[in-house]
Image 1 (cartoon, rainbow, N blue to C red):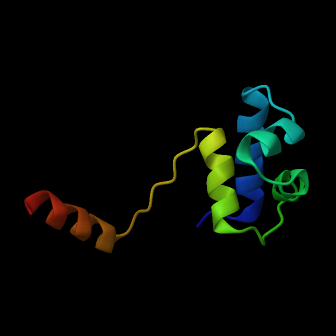
Image 2 (image 1 turned 90 degrees about the horizontal axis):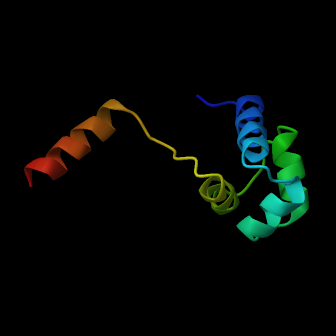
Length: 79
């Protein structure tokens, strides 16, 4: 499970690698700058849609893994 501290480190490192300030990231994602500040501090309450916007700007993909996901994906390939 991804904890808030690890997520904050990932976001910060990707943002810095992209050469973006926190304000620039917030503008590109179309969100308030406070959200980026809070996220990078490890705040746990962030809306999924907001997180998706940030991850999209930083070109970070999220992969869901579970035994059920494997079964669902295999069924879709066989359909």
